[in-house]
Image (cartoon, rainbow, N blue to C red; front, side):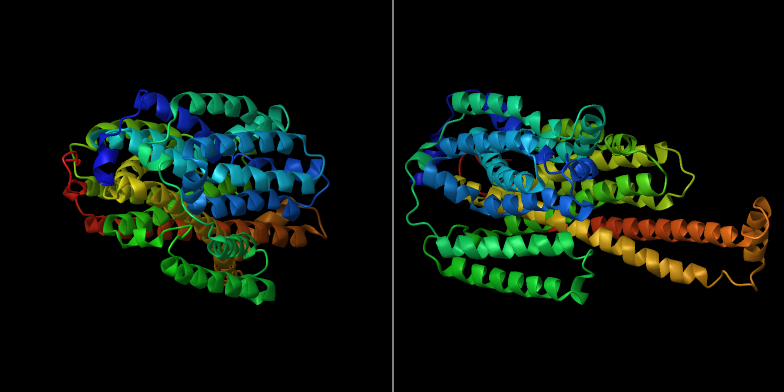
Length: 518
């Protein structure tokens, strides 16, 4: 029986060597999802592009990355997983070199598409390899290692990107991948191996229609999320047609994959209760994680006047909290029920996000750093048990496919989170501005007093106009600040909703078999 033989398989090398091999490539790939963000103005200036055109450097990577993610398991079975992993690292590394050497924006975007395609398969393959290489009772520790890369890399990305850009050149953001990629190829070739059920299994024909529908649905959805706010959402016929196309393609994709005998993505894995609950909670975590990562540097740079590197440094301490909790959770995962760890994590995360609602325009840096450390600490208690429980009741044959879907949903949550918070920020600022401006009338004593004070500082003639301009500037900053506070309240409330949802998890040990995890 295949299920029995897979349990007997033990990798030739120490599982921690295998973990180091796959995590090196994964960390490099996840880092590249955020490292280029702060360098966009430099890239646009150097390649004679507008800031709007430069955002395609990010969008092109995310679109190709999203398309490959769920198909990674099928491709691993078709080409052989170890061979596919090495080829993906090589593609990622070579395209990184082309990105660094790009002489035009078009060349950079094409190279980023190739980079995203090569990197898209690295996360699910790494996760599947880790879950299979470690015995069931040590999978929590393996997921702690994986979580370190996935949670910490997007946090340090903006800081590292800002430092490299300021001190060297934006091109070195991509060049640093070359030595890491070469080392990752060497280690993967040396230590990673395909289990018998991967070597002996080969899918049949390629599901061209399924892959095409998936690419169309994910690609158009990513474009909607990236360009929606810029195009005023449904006020734009372009966005409206993209949404219709994306929804139609997604529905057709689901119907086709459920009816296909050889689907490129096996959606039946969503019938597993733990996987469905875990995937839903991972989407919420992606919204909160990427939403706050997008908001905080923006707040620090636009309202507090921090330079790019300093705003990145203010957010980076989240990584210290994450590292600490990953080490703790790796030990607790086999002693405490996973759903209780997840509930604790979302509770702490709700508290940390709510702390950001106390911000004002005169806060010290510690008011940003400490909630970040606490939220990073919470992330470890969420990510590790969430991943272990979501994948823990699946068979090893299902693991690769499920890992691709799981990682896709986390990234989708991140995209939705960023698009949502940026829209809420712009719309919320307009609402608060309209509310505040109703108080700025000739009949408001406080307004008249402040106007007189500001006018007295200037010379005659234009002093009153300058005072009005100054007060309007203060109004805009205050309205924007209130919008930030509203968003942090919503994100904290989302975390609170996730606490009882964790009770829907079943015990992983209910899976039959002599080595089921306690």
